[in-house]
Length: 244
Image (cartoon, rainbow, N blue to C red):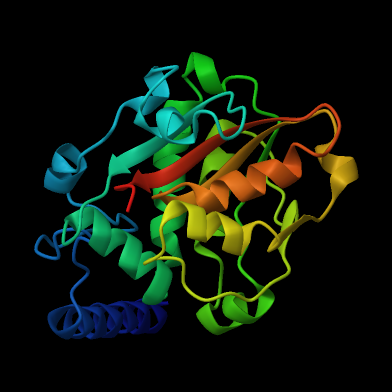
């Protein structure tokens, strides 16, 4: 018995030593500021949790998010968690989520925002969460769809199902980042199809994406969903940026 206890203790010490070596060379730093060391499964340090620029839009019927899509589609509610600026910690979060294989960023932010949306009067009757899809080829290259990860987190804390194939991207297009709103919309209008219309019929659908810029992609997705009978749409994103 003493021999087993000693072996168990030695194994624990070896693991702890190995973990300390890993942390020395690859510290678990805050995903936003990249300065503060984290414990456990956290992605943000306490300072960034307080300082990252939250929008508070989920508490407003009309806001900068809904204004951007006004006159283009009927939007029941719309909100973003953070304001996005070039070179900011929020941009670092989005970049790591999309290009550095950090899907837990999307899940964690989805959980956090889901807690807030669940308390909002404007998001209380959502039936289904549908992420903006990537083309299958791009998703295979990236390893996952960042909007899926955000949807998974939202689903968990809002206690609402998410439907991965509610929308399907049928056209493998170039990056929309440097295009204006009209050019983006023309490009993406034919890029999406409804994947499972029977599951969308009669539902209030929350469409989710990483960043709202011109709104062309979200507008195109909403247009397709609103073709399904008796649907209405709301939207949520991790961040909202400029219009150009």
